[in-house]
Length: 448
Image (cartoon, rainbow, N blue to C red; front, top):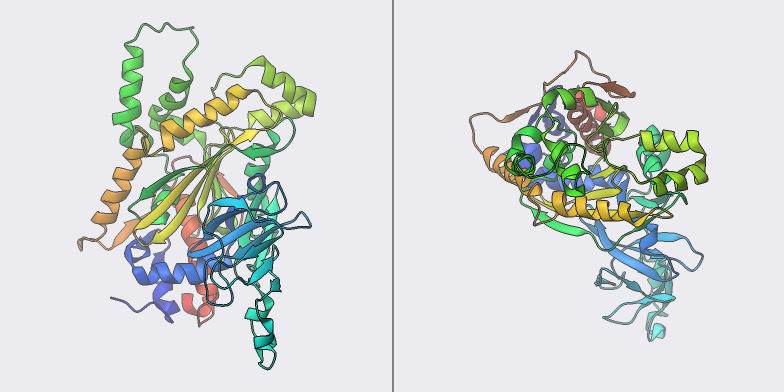
């Protein structure tokens, strides 16, 4: 087995222009390096600020392999702290959410901290008087992550103290989140309940790649969506009758290759991109007059039509989330190991919109993404087969040649064929750059 730690040349060699080595999916060492270099130096989703509406409200989650607390501080700002007491390392909070009041208190020795992490009090503090405690990290309290940015309610963090700025990292890619928020007549979203959580025995990158893989739906989902469509067509439903909401959701998964090719794809620098430029599987949802009237009143007819006419399919924010603007959903792919990923599927309420939209969003989440989903299990079966198949020695490389072009430049926005694997190549271009950026040898030298 290769020794990748401290060997940027070996890491660089894992990514070729149109192929990647299986070790990016199966190597424990590569997984550890991803946590240290890739996830620490990119902007990673933490949560939505509607989860912490009041001062003292907090949630616990993790950024890469780092447990963190997102909390509403006394000044109203959202802070992200490492979930660790600076004394003995004890986790400060273990509940998924709660309200801590004005301070956090460690359950082990009762050290307490303000909600921005600053040390507030230590029992018997006189015991530290004649020591150099004041010069230590512990004296400064709970550590904050390197940087935090709240974009229209969506909170992202960069673990590293220094690095690429939020605006430089995402650029125009934030237009997908903007469109999802703009779909609310009041211009804001609220998390609608806890997420659906679903453990996957596969590498996190398989899930991310699949979000813009438009050549699998009509194949992998034939057993589920295909069966649902066949049974519906055999029912007593007549053309022109309203189509049930469940069928509006599931039937488009059986669209032909030509539909997905024409749907289009867009990529942005740093691994971000989306399927669904010209159209998407969400395009033909029935809308009620009440929603259109609310949007027209909020934005004017021209702007409302522009917002609702943007029907992107899946937007990937590299490294590990996907969101759907038309269906108000975000999926967070949390890596727990080289072959273990926790998937959280969140849904959002459009504030000021009719209730039927949230009903459709929740129904979509249950039908497509729940542990009991008839569609999600199709994908999971493929992921787990791939994770097992990559252990065979017949071929150590994964192919990404579909619609590849000579000398592809991922440093600018691109649009093209909806079934292209360019977004996957775009992700691995970003993967390689961020992995190498903070390894021992400069990235350029390693690449050479």
